[in-house]
Figure 1 (cartoon, helix red, strand yellow):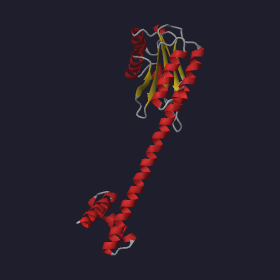
Figure 2 (cartoon, one colour; figure 1 turned 45 degrees about the vertical axis):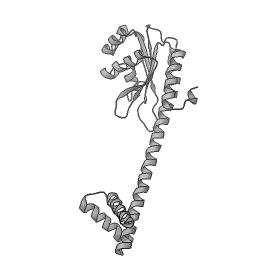
Figure 3 (tube, rainbow, N blue to C red; figure 1 turned 120 degrees about the vertical axis):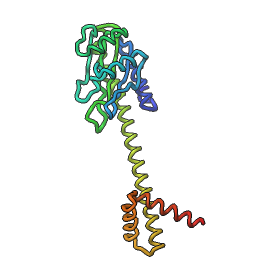
Figure 4 (cartoon, rainbow, N blue to C red; figure 1 turned 90 degrees about the vertical axis):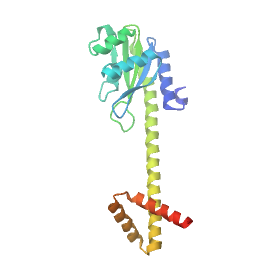
Length: 226
């Protein structure tokens, strides 16, 4: 089922649903994503309580989901009983008020080219001591699916960016070539002389060379139509 999803959002939604079904003690599940700007966001969750538990951790910068998602942090962070938790006092108190007594988070393995985790998969439970070692292994397996979905999205966006940059480079080369051709035809210049004239004009006007070329070719087209 997970591999048949059409997008990263679909995969992440199926990951949290599969985790909730497979982990006996799970009451709420979420996926936290760590952006390149260092901000956390919830990419998928099984209910509003999971989203609120995540939000509290993002606000206070403490708790299992943010600790697991941080660079160079342990890949697995757990609290068997939040009533006895001392690492995250603000989160522990807020979580208990929402009915959450235990939680564990596992880091999403880093995407290719990144030296940090992509985020974390977090399981919350109403009952203390309800999340077993087998649950951790299940969560780790499902976190790998989530990480692959995010990695594929990262690679796809990178490929799209490279294609866009290539198209811009081709467009720039073409319009400069057209402008050079116009100057060579009108002024009897060589290709190097035409380019040098465009370059000097760009510097004198403090305008990008491609914009000078685009203006020239546009004006030439208008004159031809007249």
